[in-house]
Length: 465
Image (spheres, rainbow, N blue to C red):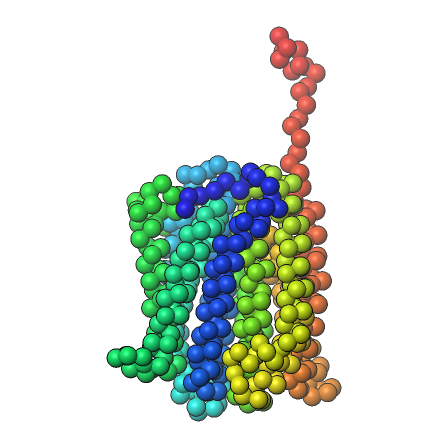
């Protein structure tokens, strides 16, 4: 697909049409996560717990991907909106080299530190035996996920929402096909168990990275996102990418820390509790995806239109994004809260996991409507390249969560239900902080461009003559 100018056309329709390819991608991604969890569920509680602990790194990889991708989106979309098309491949090249260097470092670190990472979250020998080999293989996906994530930001920045959808769709379908083959040893293949899920994910994501490599190395010469000689690093551009993206990445790093803290408090309640929270979190994560898809559309619209100084269209994109995401969040809260045991039962028949998971789902589903508001604020800041204030808002949320857990533990004692409610209450602190961020962006950043200066009295006769 070709790039697309997002400074033209009705904003309300663009928010929907641009979010649909992203939503399709996330839908497949969520389907993969849930089906993968379903397959692993057949391997027993230790395998589910091992997968859940390993997937804590999702937010770590997401944090790095956001740091690089957000900087790329802001610079690429705004350059595109200003009609500075020659600048686009130059910025893209810097982002490619930076992503490869960071991704390789993460892969090596994850492989070498697999044992220490798993043991930080559990002392159960069965879980450790399953999880450590899986994590050693899974660490290869740190590089591959980073490439897929950063490139999807870059393509959306220039209005191409379909290419990431095709690539992600192919990756996820291949992963779904490989999972049962490698996990259960169908046909001549050996039964690898949880380790097979790691190999399936790495192979599928590797195929997606190769698809992107084929495109950027010259197969799409009419597209802006290609690598062109000479290959060189430009440190001022790299610094701008990191400076814009690092606060956004830090947000997701803080979310990861919050999730890991939750697992640390839940861990003493046993493997069923860890597995139940893992299942419930994946369900909530899937429910958030439609709002993330809308936010991705808003970010691209904001970036291009802010670069073109179409402030009215930027504000319109924000308002339509809020309307859509809050509506989706309310609907999903109702769907999850009305039948929580049904959703958890899709992935486990263990009575203890069912009970804990249902409680987690009812309580945690309440975060979806207010979280939608925070998502739009975050994606708006990404398109504007103003990512520092939303990072501070997440600091408020995590700081509140840590302090509230301490208070609850000292005054009433820790229970699973109290952990879940404390997490939900932290969303309220985040909502207030994000509200402040939106007011600042609306009033100080999104000001109409100054009107052209009126000709002076002396210049007017000259012009007439």
